[in-house]
Figure 1: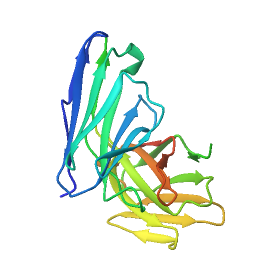
Figure 2 (figure 1 turned 90 degrees about the vertical axis):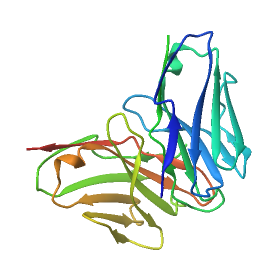
Figure 3 (figure 1 turned 30 degrees about the vertical axis):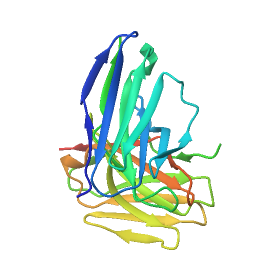
Figure 4 (figure 1 turned 180 degrees about the horizontal axis):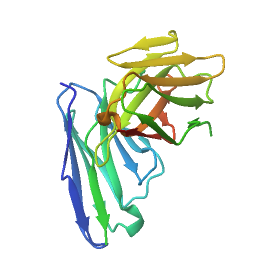
Length: 114
Length: 111
């Protein structure tokens, strides 16, 4: 089973709202990732969690706050977003972040900020 | 910084023909490569990977070729089907570092 699940599938929020994106995997992977993907562009890395600790933050604005409650779950908390943050947010996981391992992606959350 | 690029941003092929999608990479230290397929509204789906100690790897209807001399990667799809229509991304990884994605190629399969 190489499934990564994400909820919700779609999210519309105002600039003053607080919302969260959720990601789950049960493959025993110890590295999890958040990517942002704009239309017709490749995914851009936002955060990397390795063994439940934040190991990489690609200079993402503080209005995006990641959280890894346990090895299977990854959240992305959203607050005071801007319309330009509208995008597809992808979660991925891999065996770990130290070697070279396949990353498996979830279906994404389509976020629209009004 | 270094990046992965594609020669052809769009590719149209007749159903049943073979497709070849190309990718040029610039980091000679990269040692792992993946091809992903992304259909509209979905996340990238793993297709096939190859490590730098190989120059060819075959899957079901797909073959990846790696030419380290010229830093070139290609994905060959045999007997292309309508369900193969999607955007294809190559991604490279330098051991322990992050994946770098290419800009993507849209494959359109014509009836």
